[in-house]
Structure formats: C-alpha cells, structure tokens
Length: 244
Image (cartoon, rainbow, N blue to C red; front, side, top):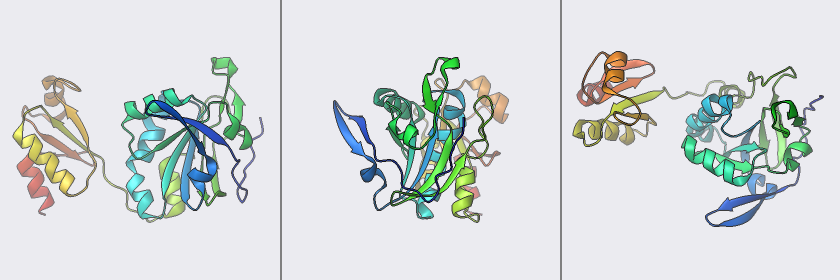
C-alpha cells in the first residue's frame, strides 16, 4: 500500500448517485466543490465504531466554527451506498454534514485512497483521511499513517481546524438531562437555544434512568446541565451562569 499526497492537484471528476426522497439524483464533484471551500473527511464505513463515535460527530460539533473560518461545507465520503449513508446521517443526527456515497469507490480510487479490506469482509474501502479543497483544488491533506488496523491520528476535526485557524475558539460540550413535559427543562433548553449553543439532550426514560441521573449528577431533579464537563445545575442556575 502506498498512499499519495495529492496537495495542489484537482480532485477526481465523479458523479455520485444520491437518494433524495423517493428518487435518485446525480450529484457531481463540480456541484460539491466548484467555487467553494470544502472540508472533506473520508472513512472506511458508515456505522463502524470510530467513524460513528468520534470522526463524524466531532466534525458535526465544530461545523459552526469551520463556517466562521471560511468553510462553506463539510463533506463525508465513504464507500457505501446512498441508503446506508442516509440512514447513518439520520442515526447520527449530523445535520451539518453532507454525506456522499462513493458506492463504486470511483472517487476513492481516483484519490489513490482505495484500499483492500477483504480480510475484514469489507472488500474495497477508503483509507481514512481528510482534506481542505478550494474550488476543486486540494490545498491540504491529512492522511492516516500506513500501518495495520484503522489508525485515527491526524484526520480528525480538531487537526483540520487548527490548520485553518490555530486560534479558532471551539465550543464547550454541553449536555442536559430532561424529561418530557418538564417546564423547567423547556426553559433551560430555550436559554441554550437563544444563545445558539448546541447541546446534547439526555431524556429520562429514553436515553437514561433516574438512577443514571442520580449517579452522574448527585441530584434527583431535572433539568441538570453540564457545560465543558462541569455541572451547572437547573434552569435557574443556568440563567445565573449566563448572567456572570
């Protein structure tokens, strides 16, 4: 295996078959990249562990910061069919990412990133990498090291953002425990939304139990809000936190 860095070159010209609603729609690389600044990250497969737990979620989390720093779109490419990619996007709730199905591996092959993972029963898949593309020309590539397994060391969202702007301010992770019908939960969520703060909602009875709430927060009531790993508390405490 010998992976080539293609910085300074144009991306391959490919037409992808994308499922939109009940019909297939051809989407070209000219449409995806022409006249735009695009961050691309490519990975071995949708629904696979690292891709789902870290790679895609972090790009989605930092999407606003990327856009504040001149990026028009964030594109995820994988050698999967469009149905799998669309299902994965829904499952991940990654509304800030454009997923592209390189089902036949044409784009990955044109990038020199198509590798044989037959030992895992995957067939031909993309090597993991990321790149910054400006009007179809590759400015920067971060290619994972050529070693066994599925290394994930340099194609992450934080590395790409640091390349674009090493002084970019990253948002703190925010999570909120809620339960259906709770007016104080609604107030806390509104406080976050008014400030355009993205948050993860953990719903009691659906995503967690009251035992989990007690074990994690030491409290029995909702909402309970965490900002940057620190427990802020309920809606009134969150309001006071913002008023500091």
